[in-house]
Picture (cartoon, helix red, strand yellow):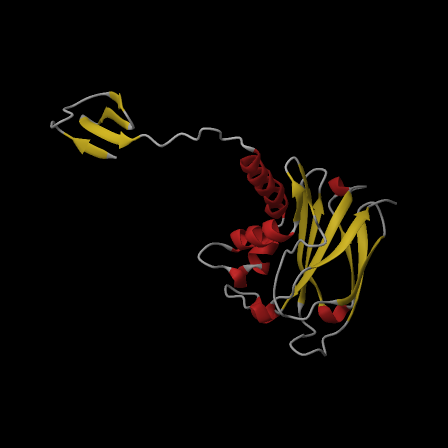
Length: 221
């Protein structure tokens, strides 16, 4: 935006070409009118917008986890943006209007800390499930006090639930009970681990594991 007194255009109001004249706080003001998009709803544009919306809904429900899980991959942006970039490239299948999330390729975290081995989830009630895994804390870089980060997602309502640090790698098992309004839902389940040394403002790739997708669970009595 520029101001002007008189000159070749003088003080004017209205549009001449892509130049718009007006007054603001008693001054004559000129601005450039942005170029219009001839067709803002082309298939390619709709495909991009739909992919962003689909992934954005999911990751927004897991924001606390991806802010940790992708912290080491921030390049001039945010951890959430890094998670969006990775998952848009890897975890969205199909083309508009037939888009879907590929949960098996989706990641809530990336890193080189050893993942949990033998990880399984079994439904125990309409609100809860039991996790079991192998205590592999003797592996290089792994530790018995590594903390579990659990992400739950309900695709039907696009809602999520996070449980952070309730269990340790050495526990080898744990039971998760969801809030009352989660009863009988069908959920997608993700788990990763974080070194307690990495639970600060600075996260390294070595302090975070890649997330593991445990599949779809139907919560029922």
